[in-house]
Length: 366
Image (cartoon, rainbow, N blue to C red; front, side, top):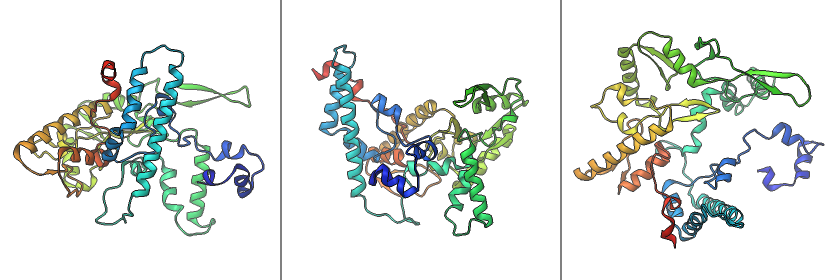
């Protein structure tokens, strides 16, 4: 916010800095809030988002559709001005998106938190899903809001955590339950040389591969072994795994609200789950809590169940309700589309397979 409201000179004076590079070198986070990949490919900027219903309305607006059609018409053309025109269209689309998000934010009414408040938006709950991967950040999220002196145990703990964060080279070192020592391979630690800018010496650090450790640890045990990504506990034996899954189902508060696979810092924080399978008592517990480490298979599975669920509800003439068993989503939806919007916003982001204007035949625009 200071960057947006004040000049560089004012910020330096406020912080007591003499070197204009101090902020960039020591304070600016590695993830500066920009979406480089989305900007390069002309995708929606991930730092801002609209609710699913508003997103669909915006993407169907005449101005947005016209940009998409022109981008599709430019695809594959080798004219000299095509790259320049595409960049202008991508920039125009980003500006339109930002304006729509700002307009929507200003139009929102204040919703106090409490028993009757709606579930948190997806982007606001990401930290709660990944904080266990970063012990220092997890503690600071609580200690920084306590009122105490720096020399108190709380203050000293906060200082130690901040120093530890500054000294870390990676944001996530490992995932609980998939510690590096769980792999018995001789080539577990892959060393890579990192050239130092101020010295001819080289530094080495291990490359953490959660997927390798996960599969390797399972192979080293005779019989069934599975990691519960909800509680980071290894379970051995099929009967024990079934009982463990049933324990989670008996305590709906332990089930995830957002059911998509989430990778953070190159590490799988949470596996994906099917919100429809979790609500189906005819399935075995291990089937209801089947874990999907990869987004592709999870997305295909959930979308198939969504289509089947909507068809069954429509045939029976029953009201559309959220199938999540662990949330009190008591709203009744007027249509399958509104149920889809709710799932996209609250439980299963990006699970649908929507056709894009860019995928339509080019002759339709001529």
